[in-house]
Length: 232
Image 1 (cartoon, rainbow, N blue to C red):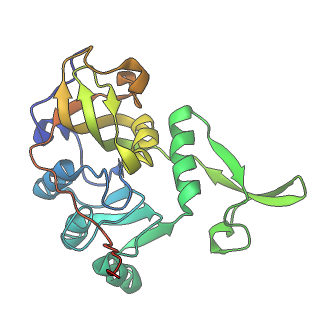
Image 2 (spheres, rainbow, N blue to C red):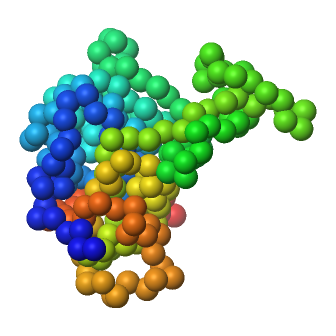
């Protein structure tokens, strides 16, 4: 049951060119930054990355974009990365933009073994092009397929040696459903504890979904958009 490995290099063993990766996180919150840094070192290419965001120019998935390691992005919120914009407009990067709720549900469906579902989100827009449309309760819905990945890489606040995970705050927005949808799931955690130390009632991802876990050495707490109020 002990799923602990000695760091990101061991955790990412088996990732090869052309694979599809899910990477958890919401904006810059809860992203697996140690694993992303190791992916840069591995120099794997032609990746398809499923992630809510594309990082920023010098952090997160932005580091992989700098090295042109990503061939396709399947994502939702990408507005903070200037390089992403340039690569997309130049045709160097294939992009599939998905409504944020649909992206989360497509990942959750993949982990639950549900092949597809109907949703009203995106009907009447480019998102619906080429997709089946059905009417439910007088409202048109489009058919969206589930998403899975060769590897799902998530970031948790705490985890134990058996792979049980607890996320903090908005890190719960995408990490839990992505942890269920990878053929192999890797978890990097801020704090690694012994089995039995986590309250079972607080666990968000049961260890059965996690194949490898390691404690990260460095975590940055960045604020993507700082908004402050002027003093009166």
